[in-house]
Length: 386
Ligand code: NAD
Ligand code: MG
Image 1 (cartoon, rainbow, N blue to C red):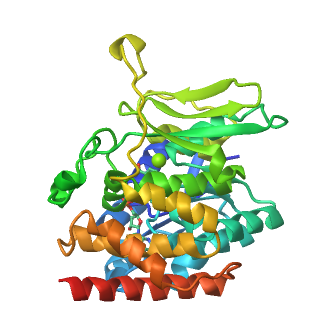
Image 2: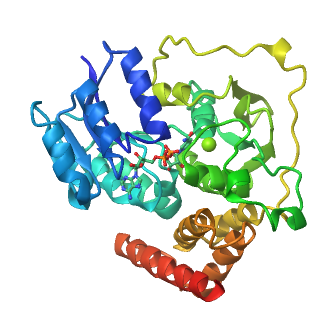
């Protein structure tokens, strides 16, 4: 029996790599659903090639184009936010790969869990915003969440066979991004072009900026808390510029297990889609003699404040990670439009955290309101600054 995959965000970096994995394994996977927000041309091309049952283009402006391009095929075409959210509920879907970017991942993931679909989770923002809600629902509906993020996949792989053993701590590795070793004076003047040049990974714009500010590692610390049920004190971050050791788990006997390999997201994607089996692949292999030294150093939390902020909200709980996520999304967007400087990304998050009201046990509608109110506040703050 083939596994039918719904890919939310099929035109992005994770989405296109997931389709490469599916294409390389046609006897194992088929595509049930493809969705994208803006890139109608690529979505059409993908639909013609993979023949999903349903396609959703988020922006309704492109609906007619997609609909007429696919009229000769047996593919249902929808557009708009409601379709994006409910398309995952289709009977034909086995696993939903959440590969869209940002807060927009939350609601479709909730719908997918309630429809009892397994989740291959790339959209880390979902767990950052509402980790307690999502992991609670997954338990309630008996749904598995398989991590796609390479660090979390590494930890997940290290935990196979260790179900009865307690985790003492995990160690998330970070490349350090393009500005590793730089100070605040340098960072004050960096451009988006510099920030978009990641040393080891080619990814979407938002996560690439998050990697440069270390917000990405902060979001991953929060993501790890929810995926592996850990306390903040059990989650360490270490900078490892070569991105070969993808992360590590330390057990109570002091033993540490690591998962390694050349940086390639196709590996964690296919592991999440086909767990517990490992699929044969032709990716380049890691060779120790090509890397005579793998290095590790402490992250600089004074310069890269977003990582410190993530630890702070992990302790505070409630809706604080939702506030950080929303402020960060607005700040990154503004940085990419040259509206604010690199260091102001953290300023904006800190000011938003100070301003927004704290809710200790948020409901779904509290998250919706917190997200909207924070985005409004952060956007107004940018207006005042420019
Ligand atoms: P991307 O920007 O390359 O692609 C985003 C996809 O989401 C596109 O298909 C786009 O059409 C769609 N999209 C954008 N806005 C949307 C909205 N409002 N509603 C619905 N769909 C929308 O992003 P990416 O780099 O592929 O990252 C996707 C997710 O995976 C992010 O949450 C990111 O943090 C996570 N992730 C990515 C990588 C990576 O290597 N790229 C690694 C780990 C985790
Ligand atoms: Mg990662």
